Length: 228
Image (cartoon, rainbow, N blue to C red; front, side, top):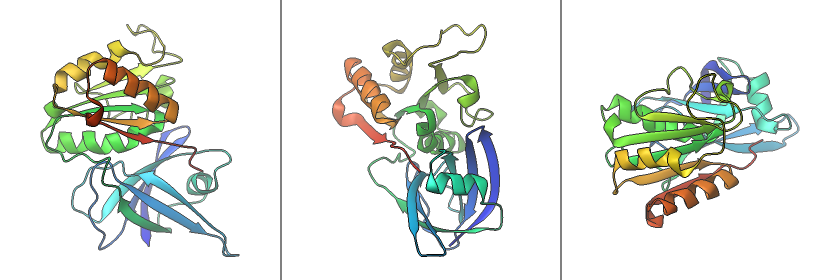
């Protein structure tokens, strides 16, 4: 069982939960945990949530959860869980969608798909390897950007699809090839691309990356479905 150490609001619809799991196996950047809830009548519901924090060898880690109105697990986490509570968790899970912290990486996230990529960015910054990563995030509007106080930097760029900030040089619109080209050039031809978001977003970005010359074998994709 993991103990909830803290709950932090990220946006109007997303919260970050800091958990402690003594004796756990340290996670890798890009992995996830399964959270399982059990009702008094024995009914259970389980959902997977990516780790947002960088690997640091401690017993603590963070997950960031978007609240879905019909969600069984996400609404419970948002509306009920508070510091001191315990949650049943399993993990860390995943081997394919992980960054080793050494090789160059291009990170492209849509909406809450930025969560596992944030773990990679945090790892790069903590290890002094920011030159090896570039992160491109696509969100509907400025208020929807997760980790807004921390994410901005020379390694990152944000694409607004519905509404941009006043005076922003790039008008609002879907992510396009010209949004990715500078990041591709910065990490170099040998980089691995990590793409995370909805199925449609991932398909679009994968097509753009291949159009830009990124080999298919260097593109790793994690698609987010409706996580309730």
